Image 1 (cartoon, rainbow, N blue to C red):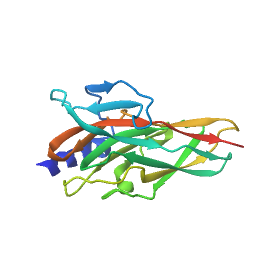
Image 2 (spheres, rainbow, N blue to C red; image 1 turned 90 degrees about the horizontal axis):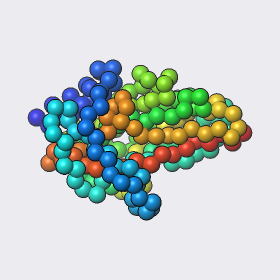
Image 3 (cartoon, rainbow, N blue to C red; image 1 turned 180 degrees about the horizontal axis):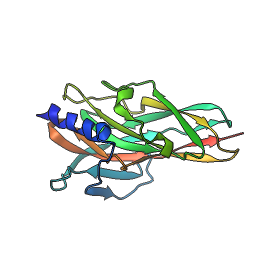
Image 4 (tube, one colour; image 1 turned 135 degrees about the horizontal axis):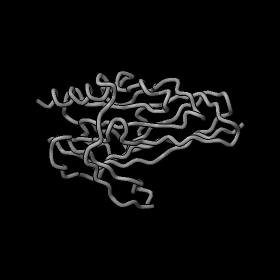
Length: 196
């Protein structure tokens, strides 16, 4: 049953034109503590009551990077709090006037490959992400693990920058753990700065 559920999530994210609609979202207050990420979001299934979000939360964030105009730059996507996580999905966006998307690479999460990314909206500056543990046993990785990289070519003028942001559009944010638990989710923005 679980495998069918996660297969359905993949279908919704990629085969169905990445048109997942937004549903109920729970948001928590922010904190400036180094161990407390900037936002918390949890996603409920479309036809059920909002689930209780549990655990200390999973954080996904982009590292800052610098490059000259016209250069290729690869941004590390890091995680914290990934302990017995079964699935994750969200959207990643950037300024299409500053960066042209090239590829995803350096996968460092069990069962993660380029097939987990939807590229139909990269011209809009949006990449979608949907991953699950095929064994449905839950995956754990150390904090600060780089789970993959996103590579771009810069085209913005000197001094411009692009935010690398995780959002819930078009694919809504959702993280699940073992026992069908919906986990808290945190994210921080990263920036790519054009230096020359």
